[in-house]
Length: 120
View: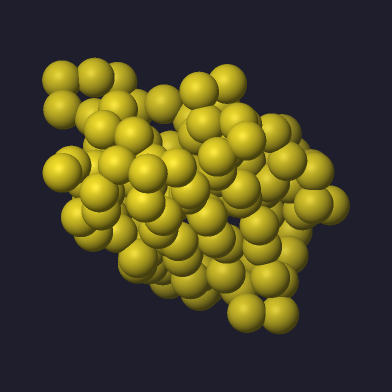
């Protein structure tokens, strides 16, 4: 059974920092591309940052220079360090694990989400 468990969300003032964690189980973590998405009220879910099995990263323009995605394969965990937070960053943040199998099919898993609220 695959589980992705996020933690680290909460309420923070503008300009503050949070670090989200996502602990995975039930998958061969090191083979998966890991990503963080977010969904604000009334908006579609959007990709925030992604890190491949090889460690390559990419992120959303609006968070570049403020957010950093990283992974520790030995701990089956992916992180999202969020600095200089803005009210627009308020959303539920979701962890995602995905892998394209040799058959061509996609395995795609989601965590339950963690709320991040940026407000004074």
